[in-house]
Amino acid sequence: MDPLALAAATALVGAMATQSWEAARTSVMAWWRHVHPASAAGAEADLAVARADVLRARESGNTELEEALATQWQGKMGRLLAGADPNARTELQRVLEQDLAPMLLPTEQTRIRDITVTITQQGQGNTANVAGGNQKNVSGR
Image 1 (cartoon, rainbow, N blue to C red):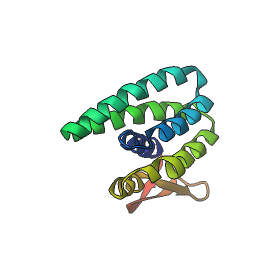
Image 2 (cartoon, rainbow, N blue to C red):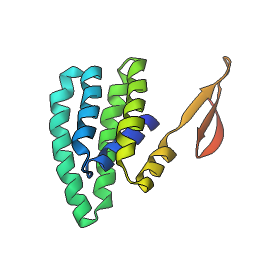
Image 3 (cartoon, one colour):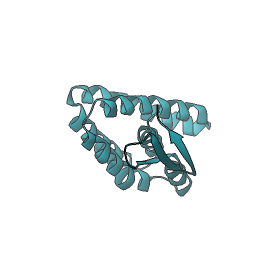
Image 4 (cartoon, helix red, strand yellow):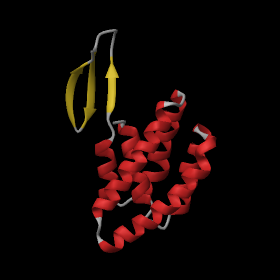
């Protein structure tokens, strides 16, 4: 699981229910076109369907559907990040922090911040500090 993809997907799904949706869509699609232009048209069509689903879910209080949509978009974004150059991560982080997160309610913004995980590794050992809520030390293989 890529924490950046999870945070961005969760923010994206949350932004689908806002009046700022067009700005969110424009920002995400600009990133998408830069990372993987060949799949942009399909992603844009998928966003339209997902937005309709989110609006319907919000009307009926179906939080499970919203969570499922966030998981779906996490997978899509994660696959793009896995095959992209490192600048794609930096740009998605910028889209998340500057474009998507400010559109969300404060409680949703907190949830996004709680998802984001920072990993720092010093030296050439297999130990990294992972910070995101609680700090844990994990060893690599």
